[in-house]
Length: 123
Image (cartoon, rainbow, N blue to C red; front, side):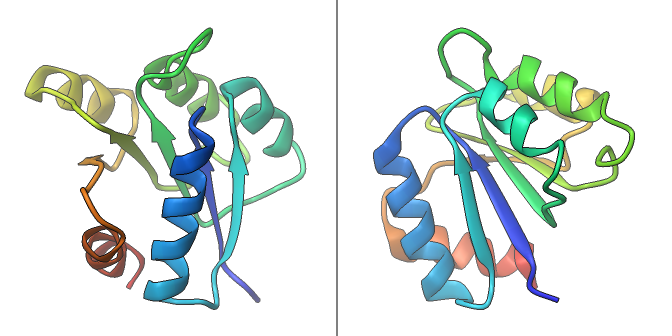
């Protein structure tokens, strides 16, 4: 069965960067994206990804709140969630971990660096 990665990020450019890095890492993964927490929650009613990556800084519903909402859904609460942001401090990272994130990742400055990070996470 094909593994699925869900990215929740309001920046469409980030979707393209993440998809490129994912395909460079392992093109057997199916990539699904949502540009808001609301859309992600709607997708998660029928989708069971293997990994979820959530941008911290999103309008309307921020990444931390999105993480909380995802972890409330019992059928997917076990799925590893990684917070994915251009900048997180240690306090935000600790908060994310307490809310159920596996880890937090600072968005790398290149597709190659992101691919290297994804190799460590996905394998």
